[in-house]
Length: 128
Image (spheres, rainbow, N blue to C red):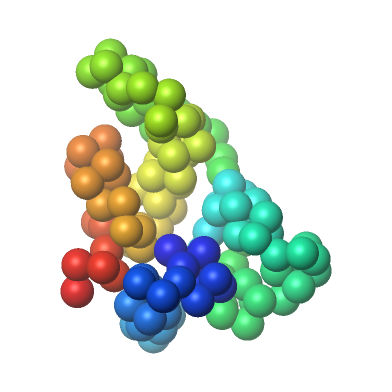
C-alpha cells in the first residue's frame, strides 16, 4: 500500500494515495516495524524514507506482545491448512498488529487478511 504510493505505482498508486488521504482525514495512520522496514528498503536513503513517511503522516507503532500472541495461532492455522512458505510470519504480524491496535488495515491483500483475521476491518483501495 505505502509502497504503491512511494513508487508511484501506475496501476494502484492513485487509488492508494486517495485511500491514505481518506484515512488520514478521519484518524491517525500508523505502521509497524515490518511495514516501515519494507518501505525503507525502497529508498536509497533511510533518512529520506523516514522523512517521507512523516510527510505522509504515518506514525511508527512497534509490534508488541499482544500482536505476537495473535499472529502465532493465525500462522499455525495457515500452515495446518496447507499454506506454503509464500506467506511468512511477518504477514501475520502485520495483521495482528492492526487487529490489536488499529481501527482497520489498509491493504490490497484483503482476502488473506480477512481469512486469518476475521474481526479486522480491511480497506482495499483497489476495490473502490
